[in-house]
Image (cartoon, rainbow, N blue to C red):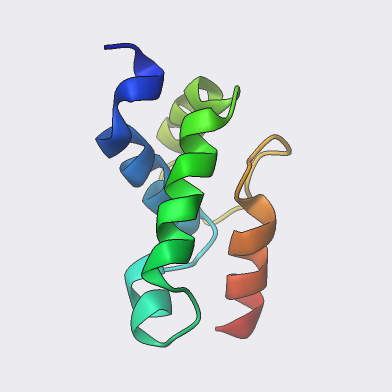
Length: 86
């Protein structure tokens, strides 16, 4: 199974990118800012993104620092929007 087939990986990449941007996706769903379907779509966007391997490196660097999503992040806009609502 290649990197695109590992759905668990993309679940954790999406959550990690949210955390990196100061967005707790579980709380966002609980607060009604993000539906489960929206989160599933985010995971799929990650899965289809050509930059997902770069995200692994990005998230591993300074993982405790709050920052922004890389330019190529397929979910960057959604995460920024949720971050502005919190």
